[in-house]
Image 1: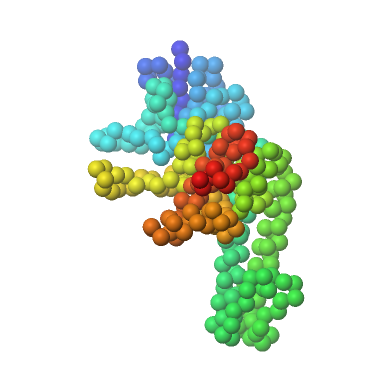
Image 2: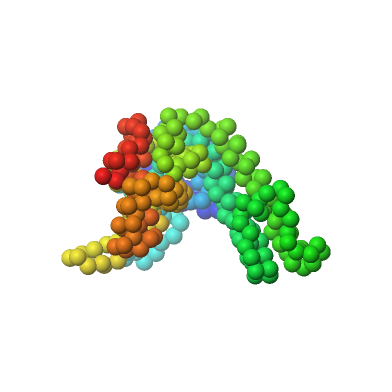
Amino acid sequence: MSFYSGIDLHSNNHVVVVIDEEDNKVVDKRIDNNLNITLELLAPYKEQIKAVAIESTFNWYWLVDGLMEHGYQVELVNTAAVKQYDGLKYSGDHQDAFHLAHLMRLGILPTGHIYPPEYRQVRDLLRRRRQLVKHASSHMISIQNQIWRSLGYRVNCVDIRKKTFTLPFESGSFLYHSAHTNLTILKALDKQIAIIEQQTLEAVELKDEFKLLTSVTGIGPILGLTIMLETGDINRFEAAGNYASYCRCVNSVRESNGKKKGTGNRKAGNKYLSWAFSEAAHFLVRFDAKAKRFYERKKQKRNGIVAIRAVAHKIARAVFHMLKNKQAFDIERVFS
């Protein structure tokens, strides 16, 4: 007899349910987040368990990797796509875990991609860089604004980052201490950002995919690494439209009879790829005449935000075909 397991994962505990081929529960227990306890609970059924379904929550790494290392087939559940009957009077953790196992038994469980652990750590390190860049930008803006409103002129970012830069305030004044705090943190963040960039470049084997990506006007080493690491295996996407949707580069409007009836889940997909392609679109529009003309046409019909997202959509589709077919970027085909 085959068994199917569903796990409802929380921050400090998880509910494990194991069912047979007739949806009878053979295990239904809440346990602490301890891999050894989980393995001990599943051990009597290991040979018969087809797979273990685990919710894609913020803390799934340890459980998924641990079960896979011990020989279990694991399915990472796309929680946003799991639907339950709206007429249910009661729903709880035990019912949710059972529902995951039930859907898996029926073969209709919506699942996500389990990113390889060896590259996941590098990908997460690069994500931390983006977080630090946002913090650094906020401190930079604080320094610029304080100088601007206090002295009436603006200092650009390049000058502030120079080693010879000194704050234009009287040393020891409140204005000086305020701006000096921002400047000190900014320098520390810039140092850590540079370290992360170096570590990432050294840790990742720069494959042909990276060379193809950086051949695109507007995609440099950081954006190229981001796209390569966040995309993973391009073959997991069936078509260019699926990849563009994953990159949040498609419209989420729902229409009927030519009228707008609502919007879909605009946040479904990868926010880091969305950011990367938006950044690439801004650079491409700045440095390529064909992309600029396409952007201006879209901007006249709608607005600048819609126009730049249209360019990002074009780049995302082009990147899919580049990685899929190992072909170099062709601006003529993208904006023909």
